[in-house]
Image 1 (cartoon, helix red, strand yellow):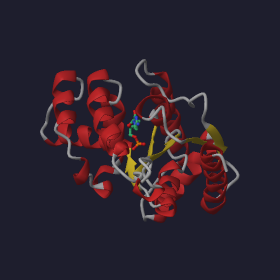
Image 2 (tube, protein in one colour):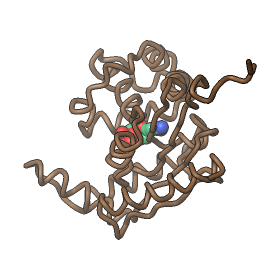
Image 3 (cartoon, protein in one colour):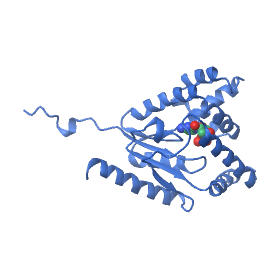
Image 4 (tube, protein in one colour):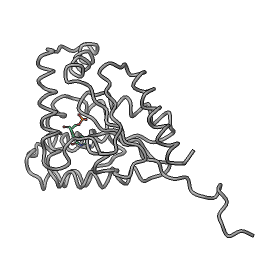
Length: 226
Ligand code: DC
């Protein structure tokens, strides 16, 4: 009898796919579709920062006290993230403030890594997935689009949902968010050295999905030596 485990007995390797990019780049929609396509779990890590901010706002706690924010982050339950509620604009603004705090980031990164490590693996999207959360991810995509294109998409999202929006204000908001995400000292938004860049300025979601699948399939084939 061979003492080498038969291939069917070997545990499936846990597969992590890292998707980073600026606000309104379409990375969230893309990450959800990719997770479905590859049979993986999905975590929108932006929701974890939003949930911490929402908790502080709800409990009338200060947004600028790191110990309080870190305590909220440590007790966060990843299974209870309510996307619809957390999508609100004022929560996003508050989230980008708590996201600069190293204590909050450490607490959330621990939870995000545990999520990524559970079989069969996961697609995580955010700002620092390829650089900090999952530096060993099998595939890293950096999804971007010009600020103007992202502002048009965000504007349409709001107005299609029956809301009122001003394009110039949306654009200014996106630029402010970019500056905060890219300019912070801890884990700023930037492409990992080994990330594949995907500029979706001239792509719809279908084209972006196809382009992402091609990049991921090629990376997985190269990894398994086929
Ligand atoms: O992607 P979003 O708008 O839901 O993110 C909310 C805020 O959280 C945003 O300002 C960036 C921050 N964030 C982060 O710092 N790191 C992540 N991995 C995800 C989001």
